Image (cartoon, rainbow, N blue to C red; front, side, top):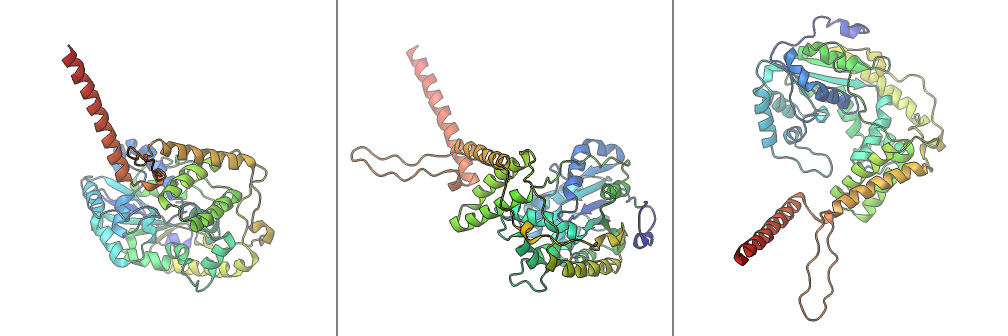
Length: 417
């Protein structure tokens, strides 16, 4: 594979996996995982002719993965372990095909027992692992945005950088970032379950955007270019739009709004609406690093390069791409945007209203008072007060009630005849 550096050249040779092997892609997050998953999803019907199968009907391993690692995103319960057991049975029944499974959630695994459980469930010796590494300075802006969007983080970009880069953050927040992207914490856990020759680490640089799909194609025996179709993945909001959402997260914490309802309004409403808005001259990208952060990030990046070289696994790509290049410090005023375009706000609010009104169509009414003296009625609960099971039961009740009424009318018509 062209462009490989001296570390990779120690492992030159055919990367094609044997028939019946399972390639487990563990991310981690913000390293092109979504694009790979979209690509597999788009070509899944063509994979069989090359002796390959994609392990999930959805883009990635979702609830089964959450179940086996005992974790779920905010607003979601940890699924029953039965999800994982059924998934493993399905994978085992995929015959002699080369199978690919992908979830960036496994990228956060640092517990050797959990890693061994996953590998054992997926077939033990048939499992090969691939992960990716991207330079910290490229990860930071998108990772902070993701924290605000999906974890409802309230920290400013600079506050979050302090938590990530300070030697010992008081509350441990920073390790959510450095942990999943720190190869000395993640790779050894997986090497307790697979031999080093069955682990491939792909170092991603700015020059070659096709390296990751190329590696998957070589390992699985797919035609060159087949997995380059994943587009439109993980669109980014402007710095202004992220800052509005961050401040809204602060208000949510003060108001104690119900989390699952807030998640629907923001992720399905605000974020989609802001992404749909036309670009404006007011839009700003997340700025370069503040001056104080450059030196510690350079140290962290240099140490990471040496750590990768010492792993003993196959490394594809140029490890020097993980170093921090010379950068100019951000203007302090650029770290706190105070303006956003009217179009972006209007589009975001419109989409939020769409979500709210759609949910209102299935809201229930409160109890009615009896005859006689008027009674003060409680405010009818909204969708935020309902669980998914309650909604299903209410819909069942209404359908049965409607069927009963129709049957009664039909019976009365028959009696009149």
